Image (tube, rainbow, N blue to C red; front, side):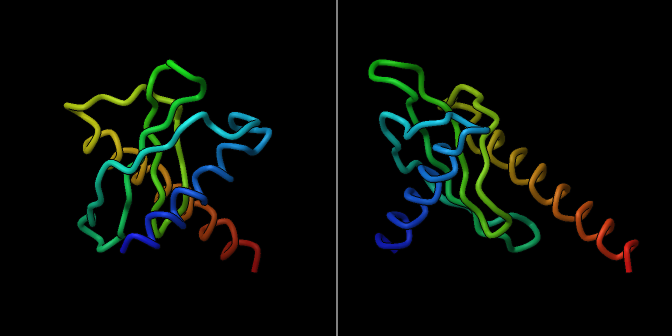
Length: 104
């Protein structure tokens, strides 16, 4: 389990480092919790700081992908916020599959 979280943390770091996202490694990433959604998709919640003493932001790594909307981490709503991010990812992949099937 611990190795899985380390791997997911590295995946989030790589995703955030992309020029279309933060464009650099975040200052810090911390594991928060995990959950499984109604469709059985496993999701890990992280919080990250762009800079030293900066705000914490929400990010997820899931079976559907890695994502963040650079929304500030909220201790009260982080689980619901992460579920919303997961739904965005799932909708994205459903749309991509639809486009692919229409091309055939």
